[in-house]
Length: 304
Image (cartoon, rainbow, N blue to C red; front, side, top):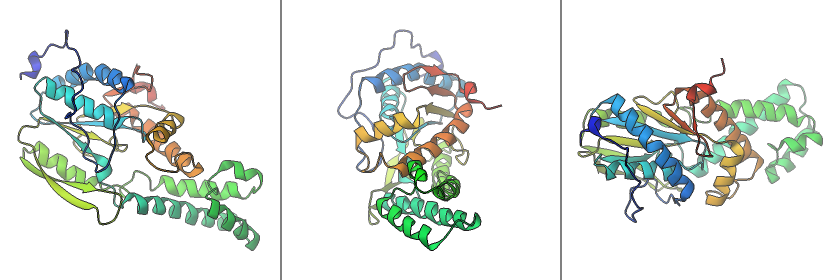
């Protein structure tokens, strides 16, 4: 199809199909509702407009935002809509590319937070045997990241500040995510390679493998990923941010039942840090859409 001649004036979103495309993360569940359809149908004409501007044979689109905000569902819908108008598209899930399986990565995050928290106490000369005894109990209940605990343990403010700072240096960085491998995939796609091996990662150490994907008829690679707007990614042509607050993200995760600790103080801290990073990258997006479905100006997120 000649993209430049495409007219979406009378375009209507097609009915959902049971065999419609979806992300390639093993075991990931998506549940498309009316809000996803509304956002995807709002984004799609804007996406076509950006594709026309790019005017390339191979284009990479990134759908990014907070964990659980609906990236998988909306990326699947956008891919489906592209296919419905004759544009070959494929959804790649960035969640296949952390350096550790989820279980180990969750443990690494907590370990980084706690190790730095202890060093913070030492630096501020607040550490003692009594403090360690209290920490032992807080660690058992996993409430050491909870700001509410500071009322009973004032020294915990120093611990949490240092832990959060170290966690921010890890989350979403190349220490945690394998941007290099995704960059290699993007490069191979843009060079026109017809068979590209994509990684699959489950939730246990032995669930790692590669699938060979035929890209011969694919013009648009859609990457759905929390970190899809990160500056370490190369070759993203059209970044699309699904904006949300940490509270909205946490509620979506709870309903989706993605993990068992979505309401924990530590998860709240992780989501807040992720949101700070997303806000920093928002001005670089081509399209930004709010949780309400409103289209936002990316430049409104600039801090200068």
